[in-house]
Image 1 (spheres, rainbow, N blue to C red):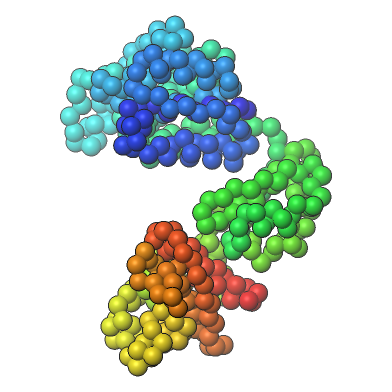
Image 2 (image 1 turned 90 degrees about the vertical axis):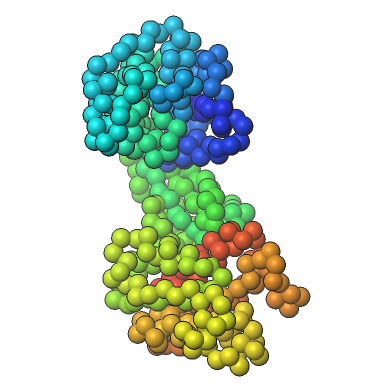
Length: 406
């Protein structure tokens, strides 16, 4: 289906709040096989909201409208859209009861202005919101099906996943799709390597989600799965080392799967990433089975006192060096008794760089019973982006070790 998104809110238009909802909705629709063809942002203005909804209904089969479902005077989204399509608003006693019950569970007062959240366009369907007071709304307006959703992201996600995604899945043509998640080279390089691949009925597209590149394969018809499998085999033959997982499997989840399969434990010593790698690993349920410990050895003193790096080594080579990274990896493996010790040390910037060691310099090391591995990179990026890409580089290094494709 063709999808349009209308984002409402003065705070969105002024830039005080960043609109992440539309990107999230677009991504989910894309993954379900639907295409966003139009997107607009409007302030909390009755006429602007109404006109935007009417325009959206002419451009798309399905329209998502976010924001303005609260209880305050500027929450006018649903009533503005209804007025534009000459639909009357009707009070729903059941919704009002649910709203009062919601506040009672929280131990908070339900004020009279919350009643406005119980008004829906005549003939509309409420969409259950178990984590907020405002229900979502599904309504037929013009020729399009509208979904009105709260602006609070966690409420929007909840309603979408439970009430809208099943509807979207039913509306999608019978098709098969697969995502290959890649890391290590830019999108343009993937495109160059795959430009003459024979796709047949398979559609191939790229999606960058920093620092990953996702390759999406889609095919329709009774032979879709086989056709995708054939193209995937060809892709893996060309860029196999850079594909780390499929579909919803994250880098950290993949590392967990490999460590579990091999019965190995990992410990990490982080300097420039400040604990980000350990955070990624422990975001996976069950990570306590393979993650022994993480140490943030940010200062030279901590590297010396905790990890056993010799002061003379740091004086000679510097804290950002192959020698220091290797000793950090050895140290965390030895004191933890883990099978694998991973260490990172680098210069995140924007200050601290030199001609010999510019901003973005990073050393990554792995220590195992088989010996040590080391990688030297320069990733001159904004500080947060630097930490993210280094974390991925470090985990990808572990992945490659575990699958023995070093």
